[in-house]
Image: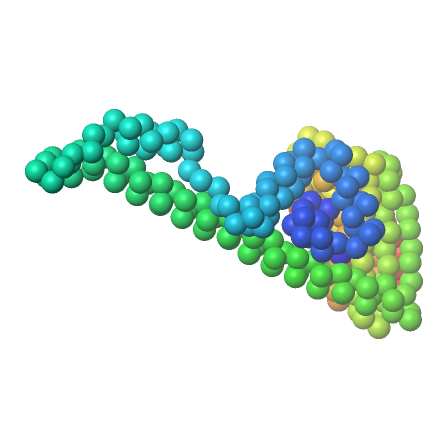
Length: 238
C-alpha cells in the first residue's frame, strides 16, 4: 500500500495495486488533473514499448529533413565533391533525428525503470502494512477531524509500529498542509506532512514504543518542526 495517494500513479499504471487502492485511486483521479495527465503519459509510454515504436522527434524536424531531401538533386560521379557539400545539411539533420530519437528512448527507458522501482517499493510497503494489520495484538482507533473527515490509527506493539490512515474532507487552503505527529511524554515528533492540496494519506510509523497518541495538525507547507496550531485530531493509542 502506498504512503500517499499521489504516489499510486506508477503502481496503478503497472497494475501493482490491490482492489482497495485501485478504488481509492480511481476516485482520486476524478478530482486530480495532474494525476490523470501523468497516468495518460505513462500509459502512452507503455503502449509504445509494447509495439516497439518509440516516439520520434518533432514533426518540424522530420519535415525539414524530407524537404531537404526533395530539394537535393542526385548528381553523378563527376560532381561527387559538390554533392557531398550539398548533402551536409541532410546529414546534419539526419544526425539530429538519431540523437533526438536516442534521447527520447533514454528518457522513456528511465521513466519505465523509475516506475518499476516505484512498484517494487509499493509492494514492499503493502507487505509491511499487511504485517501490521494482521498482527494478533492489533488495536484500531478512529477519530473525526475538526475540519471534516477522519483519522484512523492501527497499532501493533509486537511490531512496534502503526498505520495512520488520514481521509480529510478537503485539503487545507492558503499554502497549508496536514501534518502527522507522534506524542511521547508530552513532546510531539513529526511523522510526516502531506503535500499542498493533498487530503488523504496512509503512513507507516515505526518506533511507537513509549508513544501515547497520534496527532494531526494543519501547518504551513512544507511542514513544521513542532506543532503551531491546535490539533485537528488527537488519537490516544494507550
